[in-house]
Length: 145
Image (cartoon, rainbow, N blue to C red):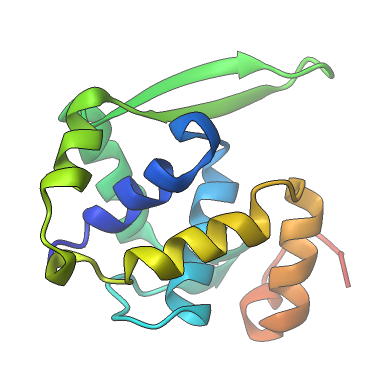
């Protein structure tokens, strides 16, 4: 099983192959592992903004370095910076060419997750994660529940 397929597959199912923010990226992979059938390639711990996996963070950096994911920063309407991750053509081919057996979570399960959370803003996503997985929120700097 190739663990790096999970972040690539998350981008593949995202609208326009794009996710805004590392926090959203982390939470969606966390939910993919917790709420969908399949293996759990990443160990998550309770951190400042809920579930966090250093290995996932490192894998995303490696995928950016390997030109499978594009990384950019954009300014929000409030003047803050947000990280933007986009699946490259090479990343899309990696997902398309992978065997279903290589996926830590079945593709259909990921598409269902994407449908459930694609229009949910970050605060609502965090509130859902904190409510459903309160142990992962115990070290959070945010008070959402």
